[in-house]
Amino acid sequence: DTGVSQDPRHKITKRGQNVTFRCDPISEHNRLYWYRQTLGQGPEFLTYFQNEAQLEKSRLLSDRFSAERPKGSFSTLEIQRTEQGDSAMYLCASSPTLNEKLFFGSGTQLSVL
Amino acid sequence: QKEVEQDPGPLSVPEGAIVSLNCTYSNSAFQYFMWYRQYSRKGPELLMYTYSSGNKEDGRFTAQVDKSSKYISLFIRDSQPSDSATYLCAMSEDDYKLSFGAGTTVTVRA
Image (cartoon, rainbow over all chains, first blue to last red; front, top):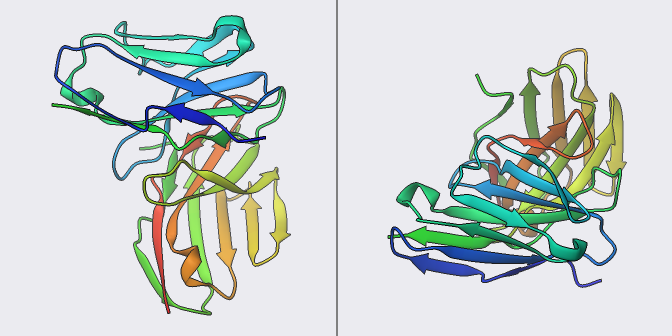
């Protein structure tokens, strides 16, 4: 069990570019979550998956954001046409089914210039 | 008003002191309560997890939940410099979506 892995750790991009982040959850964890954290704030829920099914999306997740979890394993979060307001730490977490103990990765720090 | 309010800090205490961290919330449907520790540039790490009201102790950490007052606390006894971090309270009413406080930054001085 190597924990939740996120890649890349840091991403610097120019406004208007597309970016994609990857998350590898703890093996055999059925649930996968994406959260966003800005400086001085706690993480905010974006979306979550039960296996390959995306079961809820926060209203924070605009149409420019899309998340997938093909085959119920790793997940990707894509942001299209990035804006400066998208600059944040994007955190992935996983948990076993029906368990609130979320285990977080180290996050991807996005900076949009 | 935010759903979860956390004492903003920062807190600076001498080594060996007791650290007291607090959160209040407005959603009476919350039934799962957690404390996470977050080091700089790292993801949150689960410290304590409690269901409903009551106390839970784990080593130097004690979590308290008072649902009647909508108030939760975390106490750290015999604090160490390695406890210096940001502490986040989190809670949820269901089994998938957490609401976090903004965090309290704690510095334990050697």
